[in-house]
Image 1 (cartoon, helix red, strand yellow):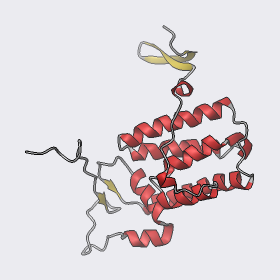
Image 2: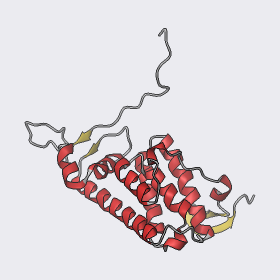
Image 3: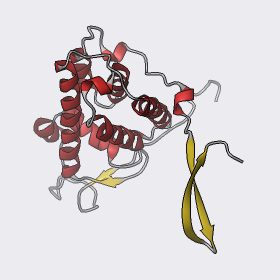
Image 4: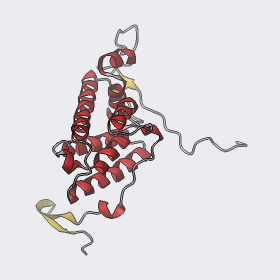
Amino acid sequence: LGFKEPFPVLRNQGMIWAGGGEKMSKSKGNVVTPDAMVEKYGADALRLWELFMGPFEEATNWNEDGVFGTARYLQRVWGVVRRYVEAGCPAGAPSAETIKRAHKTVRTVTDQVERMRFNTALATLMDQLNYIAKLTPAELGRFTIESYVLMLAPMAPYVGEEFWRELGHNKSIHLEAWPKFDAELTRDETVTVVVQVNGKVRDRLQVPAGMS
């Protein structure tokens, strides 16, 4: 070619098959329209399920239960945001564990999104939600909740904007920078070493990270 390619890597998305594993076809009456799902669950719930159902480049079967699941996930996120806002958005005093988890989540999701592993990025966010949903607003802290919403927004742009406005921001979340993590706070102080004898696991030891 006499010119440079407009992008460094070509990625093709996988096909979404009907629930039974066959190709969607009007003649078979198994076509699922996005409009119907948006009307029932919302655009962001549909978007999240399409990202979560599997690796970006692999084919997968349609399952409406998944859209219901991502709609419930967004409701849970809203519950955490609402409690924090109703408490006055306190700076709080998050524990060292909460701060480390927040920075580790940013590091992990950043890596996964850059590699277009949206399904695992969402899985990481869902796991973090299970943790922060148990915290009081004071234990949560502003960085933890705001970095979470910032990472969710590209995948759920409409509710992401709503969450951001509820947190007191007038500028659109889609004009904000991606959250940054402190590398020092993402390092594990201990690691698990598996002890095997004759190929069988006999014990798991917690040892200081960096130990020889």
